Image (tube, rainbow, N blue to C red; front, top):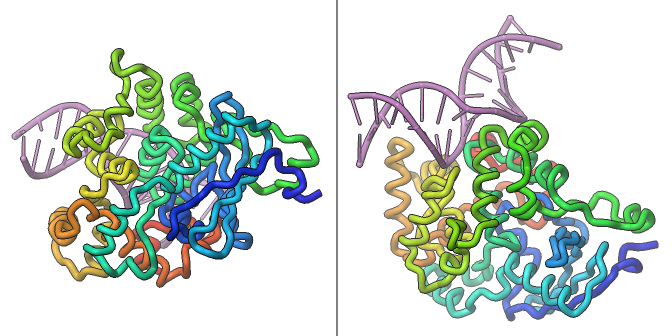
Length: 343
DNA sequence: GGTAGACCTGGACGC
DNA sequence: GCGTCCAGGTCTACC
């Protein structure tokens, strides 16, 4: 029995004319983090989603060879009705930025024509802001392999498992089978569990507090996602809100902002310093290089992060081949400044 | 406002 | 196999 013969539902999702799954899904490191899985052979994205019903479902996302052709999504492990289809579409659309303004992409390419021909403009993210925030926290003050481990353990220990019949489970062996924890699940988790079983270290209490803030309504001190995601809310206001959250500093706040589609600020870290030194030829202390990098990308204005990021991404691809060929357990674990210096 | 040190984990390295 | 060192952003105390 093949997986194709056992899908519960098949959904078609229209894409923008320039959309290319392998390039646009494999455009940011999160495509290597659970519960995402990129199958390099089939050029297929697998992702466990938590549906509004609370059930977990495994989605298999494919696209024909031509850019702009629709995504074909097969859903395993949960019955999908009309509302369920809309739910899957909405989550994948956010994750793959299918709803991103095409005019903004054209504006970016006009400012930075290097990425017009390869068609780069979209950065992969998570189906929810909450997951983006927690993934960002798990990427702070650790090397990339630890981030990979933390996300895998959070899903396995706290996330909802996909319920699959035995024959189907066998057919899908090797694919992710636990969803990313919801804010409610993480808010109820014990710090000791996160520390000991998910290997999150001192981030335990901060993750739980962040999750709690995502479960509360704004009127009771919770995070006002509607206001933060409203394009009319100024960047400075969003930054100030984010940086006041536990575990979120200047790097994390700027990274969450780019994940929200606000690209003017640069999340600068040690990897940025390496890039500034080796690719841009900047000199000085780490702090001095960061200041110079901010000035270097300032002409790209509202698209500064995209210019920086795709420049960095193409540097990785020159070293290791196209991102859609990176195996999760080999090349996909290499992305730290120290390892890249050696590479 | 700037700086130093603690926070944890996992990998590299030397013995 | 064991111990030590180091990388990695945030937070707090202190100047």
